[in-house]
Amino acid sequence: QVQLVESGGGLVQPGGSLTLSCAASGSIFRVNNMGWYRQAPGSQRELVATITRGSRQSYADSVKGRFTISRDNAKNTVHLQMNSLKPEDTAVYYCNADITTIATNRGDPYWGQGTQVTVSS
Image 1 (cartoon, one colour):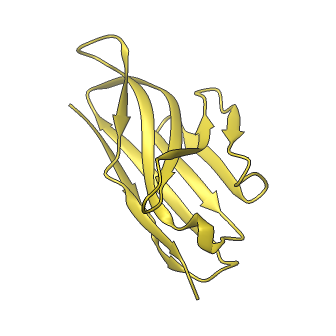
Image 2 (image 1 turned 45 degrees about the horizontal axis):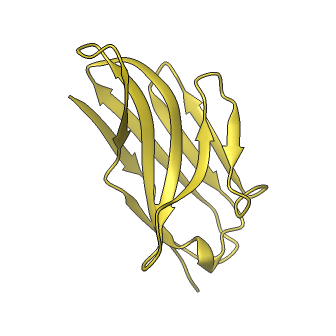
């Protein structure tokens, strides 16, 4: 069984910063692509950023230049550094990872439980 556990959400003022972290644990053979998604009330879940195992990054246009995704392959963790936060960044942020398990020997998508980020004065 595999789990993704997120941490680091909270309330921040506009212009502030937060760092989200996500740790994968369980019967993991290899963690492949990792990423962050978000879902605001009344909206669909949207991609925020992704990172390959080789650390190639991609970002949604709305967060380019403000957010940075990184990972530690040895610890099976992914982080999202969020700077210059805006009220429209308010959402539940979800960690996502494609993970190859020891049991299946194939990559499957896994999701964290979500962490709330609220940007408000």
